[in-house]
Image 1 (cartoon, rainbow, N blue to C red):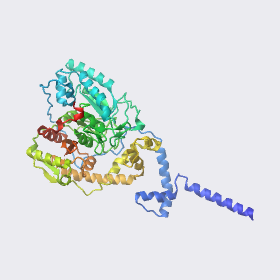
Image 2: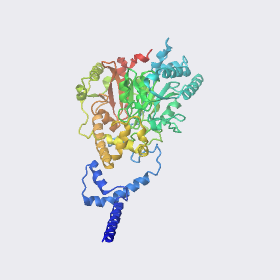
Image 3: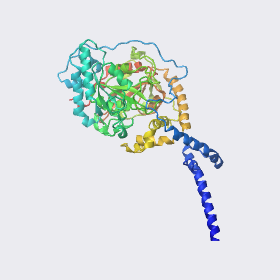
Image 4: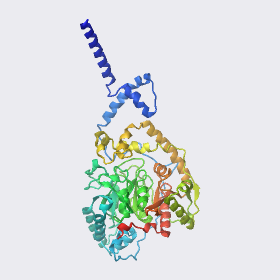
Length: 553
């Protein structure tokens, strides 16, 4: 009896083990499917799950195989984003409105004042050989060494490269080979942009020592025009916020406050006069927000205007590169130097950049009245004051609202899905755990949860995005410029999804002497129009000429 019982027990054990093995042959069970489907809002029955099991197992084996194939950082997905509405034609006409270098600029008694000079002023001094690029470069580098300990805006000082480029610029200018307004002028780039010979850290601890053996296209474009690179500036960790592996970048107007992100370094360093201008990137506010916080002028161009080759990808369908400067005119000059077609970036094109020659009174302008009226803060008050200035300039803006019947609370899965794909190796290796921030709102947490976004929902969100593109373009085509708050309301998410250009300009200060801003939105490829209006506004106000007292000595 005991022997028979033992045989029966052994048989049961073998059968049970066999069943368990079969159930786990793919590394997950049917119970896992029943639990996992709740994240997708599904409720498949037992028969459906039985039917799916082998199919899902085959999928998983395919995923495991896919991960064995290397994908280069510069590889775009085959589904390249197109921001153009149906029937849209990329403009072709090139209208030249040349930049003017003033002749009457003299060296100031206190040379530190040059740290806040405009690009045309610096260009005049350099072209007329009243100062050398080496002298100017040393001035900015000395300011970085003196002040950046308070700001934490620089990740790597490219002093050796900068001094070599400055000496070359002086030789070329002395020989009569003047390349244009950026020749010999020191600048910095957000540390998402690769520069051969220097670390490209992306602001994150796992990449602190990352060396990329080529230089990004946009840096090469500036180098070709004689600009002098002196600093790799802070990016918030993997393009999020103002916290990076070395600390938190500060607002030079108030050192108790962060510089905002993720182009925190360009915003802080430009405002504090550590560089003459800088380049930032934006996916969802990373140029406009630090420009607003630090009291500078930032241009987020039309999607696809500036090459992203050699630049970290956060979202292939939303990333943009743009200038962060102290004025709209400086942004025009820098943008004119960096835009254009690059065979290495499939999203770029040959659309021209035309500076606007229209008077403000000739423009059709609208404003987001409801959003602005709802803002009772100093920011809202200063925008309403800016509207009064625009009216004095001959503008009578029309009150409008942006399309609102869209799933705005889910659109960010587009960004998060694409970021999850780019940083899949980081998450799967576990190195994501070494990033400084590990909170619910951190990039590390965002990358982990991206693994749970269904492909179906990603595509459905993009279908809604296509409808949004069509509706927004139909609205925007009625106006040359739309005036908006910088970050409140749906404007920021909407225009980043549709690819429209914006420029953010300072409008004054709040009760704590922190800068405030307003944003001007333009039609696709109409950067010239919004920059022209921003320039006209800055010609009759002086907010762009204000500088942080702690760094203006």
